Length: 306
Length: 37
Image (cartoon, rainbow over the protein chains, first blue to last red):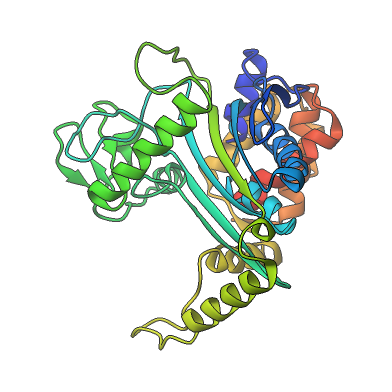
């Protein structure tokens, strides 16, 4: 994503010094504008505001709108979970051409619209469901394309609507489309992310009346809940712990080493990559170095990284 | 190829600071992008 960020900074679409700004504040309902700043910064700032607010309201819902690419939405859910809070995040992705087809269609109408929910655990890592509502994340399609590999069957259709495993249909004409995960059910969730993230929280969906360029804009509907405001923390923590233990106790299916809960595979992957290094294909690495040069870094500056 | 998370974070952070981002913002964004990879 780094080359796209650099292009957007230089085009004035990404404001590097913008900060989250409260537009509406009705107590348990807030609208926070990211002012097209770095999504990772304004998203974190928005969560700071909501975490503080929920201490007095027990629940707070917010539209976090006009953020440049928020990145991994699980980060914001984990930020809430670290404060002992449950959170739900529904996100749409606008500002550029759609990439994901509706269930039953072959034309692109939406993007990968993430859905994320996290539940904190007592003295343990939280349960974190963090997923794109497309059949696979677009980033994985891009990695496969750059590496000359196929994507799993069932994720893509070509321009005639025929299923394909060739990621080129997303990047070379005639364009195909990425499909939703889980057939009509995943499609339904993607639509809700579009409508709640865009229409309710952001006022801007992927429909064609709205502006499209090479921008990457996220609007996010977020609901943060303090479990202490519901059935009590002791009961909550007991039930969450007991249920996770119960899930973990399931006998693994053939070929599976153990049963995990949502969030554990990602944490295992991150730990491995931090220890061993991050796999980067040649095309992606060249693009990052190219972005560095576009950004004005000299070959001498880059020598440390080569 | 395998690139260390620190090396990649430092490079991406440098790219963003060269574009006018405050160092703290650049580091936050770079660390997020690398961790999300």
